[in-house]
Length: 267
Image (tube, rainbow, N blue to C red; front, side, top):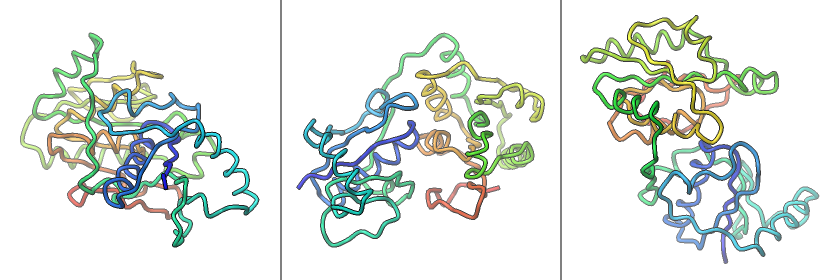
């Protein structure tokens, strides 16, 4: 029987879901398809920017999903959908629905993800030529939607102190002269609160072009990430064996994520 992995959310979340897709295919040896069920964020981006092995579900399975999902909400035919955090039962579910942010799903040998050769604007080409140099530090500062009341209840709001401590750590553990590259949806806040010499500020990759921030951050010698799947994957996909600093407190509450490499540093 086919397994349909449901994709949802932005690009960072789609990569986590790709981990589940490849886990089902390569580790569990199941016949897997995908279905992106939302029309939010920038839509389904994974196969636009990455080399993938995805196969899309047929229209039949897409239509059936909406019927099964509605019945599932009324506790009918619940065995057909595996929802994240629900115990997996002996039967094989038809639909796999969740975010799956767990390194179990992306550290297996079947998870192989790389950027396609993306065309760069003149501004991004200039940054790429600089950020590939030794001593480059990509810093992601996400504010914007994280400052909304509903998101403050979920995600920890990172302070300037976190970034200052992370920068100090990078300085203490890097021999090369450092150049800092700030990627943010609130560059003015960055300039006012995180003042460093030799800095570049990147804030022009918006909307469907936001992937270029992830692409550029993945080229750096070191990454300071936010509590965001977006910059997490920029660091994870970085092929330069970077020094990575991440926030110890990811959520506003006590929730933790088992996603970080053992050699990454938490602050």
